[in-house]
Image (cartoon, rainbow, N blue to C red; front, side, top):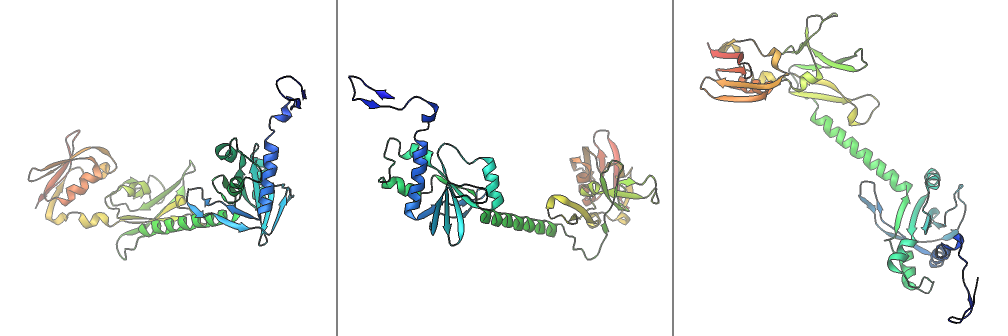
Length: 337
């Protein structure tokens, strides 16, 4: 629109319309592409994994061929660099970042993409300055700088990252299994069995439980003692649980109990021939929490909140007794013969 007045020289000005709001974006976008094409070089930024670990440093590549707005597999990137037969896509962000639809296409095609944030660089370093090709500082930051560049996608690094993550998971699993693998050459080592309950959950159990944690109410083993895996975890006789992953699953979270070494309690248990053992017995208390008192023949007293801890201390003493401190009931005592 024409501007004609007494204060300034006659001139033409842009008409106020929505098309002129982004007047800088189009020439800046075009300028960045022209600079990269003329330099024949480009520095890619470091690649940082999703967990924050740097997998590669910044590298300056020499460009064999460069194309602007070239269509590749239904994708039209801003710049396509070709180096040693490989393609690198450059997206220049000024006003519109790469949307999810375009990103899905890029990942599906398997291209490596670097994004350059031109607007942020201009605002932070060159606000009010010269954006033209003669500005060497602008060109150096665009081509060789890495502060305003980031990897949008790189299939090579993603593959390496996934492989490393899988190897680490396998090492953790092997270490976990090694710690929980039963190597006892002799002793009472039992293998867990399982069946599906009515609610659909699977119950892992071992027969002939030494503390008779549970008793079969029906079936061929009716009246015989057994224990679930949760019983074994807190039992004084359980020395170690062995775990194994489910078939065809490689992750530690899908482990199931395999064997139990049931010899731990026998190592520290007292010799019955040395004492007279009386009382109700510990069978009904092993899984309970509360307040339990262990009193030795010397008068020493110790309180425990878990019965299996109280009983483990009790069997290491000489003549002693263990009580339910809430009710005063004698659970078990041993006195010399």
